[in-house]
Length: 206
Image (cartoon, rainbow, N blue to C red; front, side, top):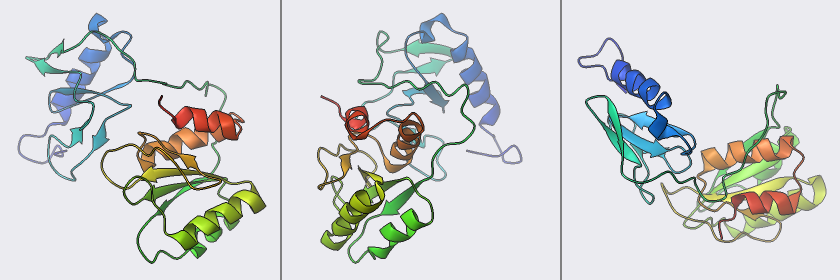
């Protein structure tokens, strides 16, 4: 968060702790993790919450997995993977399908949905209001591109955290995934040839 030219840059310590964690036996069977400001978080749940603060990475609902004390990782819990964590083999993947994020707000122009698809987007992620809401006219545009172009549309939330339990006809509920993470998961799923039901299952947490 602080560059090398600033007073007390945090990069070197973050890097040292990240490498230390990766080499630790205690890190096994915990999935991908994020280390910053002496905190250890699950990458599945952790998001950047502030543009400048050292404690920017937070997992508001899930909490941290542990922390560092004198460059030694200490975990609060025994290993546990995030629920429904998917896996994709990308060893031979060189490109991913184009997926765009559409930000939701009152008065949003539904034409943005059509424009993104006409420019080559194979999927869309809606950063919805509340628990994934999109204005009615924009919902109609989503249904149109799903029917006419076969576009896959995932409804996420523009809030920092939360769960999207449902989606309008033709869409897919984004569950716990914020728009940025939902976009990458959708890109990977489309690249792997997943159909509607398989993609729906990826985002659902029972």
